[in-house]
Image (tube, rainbow, N blue to C red):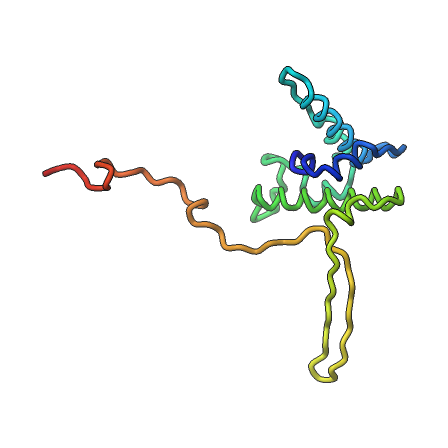
Length: 171
């Protein structure tokens, strides 16, 4: 949520967003961003809680179906491989961007599309008949595939005692 706060056009539009839906994430995110603006402009240190946002977030059935509300102890026991924190953060971001887009479309505004939207063209061609079909779509997030960094997945190793050149003592 804090990363989204630092996208000025998104922040301005969400702070200005007003609607009459009871559990609107755009409204709650706009309120949270407004509170962050107030806290940032105060001379004393203050904190902001996302309580209203979380309350609205919990009311969206898709969030629960995607496992975004589950915490470590409440993860489904049937899952052999519970999602990693990274996978949950990616799923949360994807869900939030899609939900904000859906809410902005309902309000007839283009909030997410100009900031996050990318036009995709997919072309399928039959090898036998050479018949092809082209599909156009809009994507807001992309899954990146990368090899895990071994240094990040291994625990830190204890350094051997010795001098700075890596030589061990003992003459």
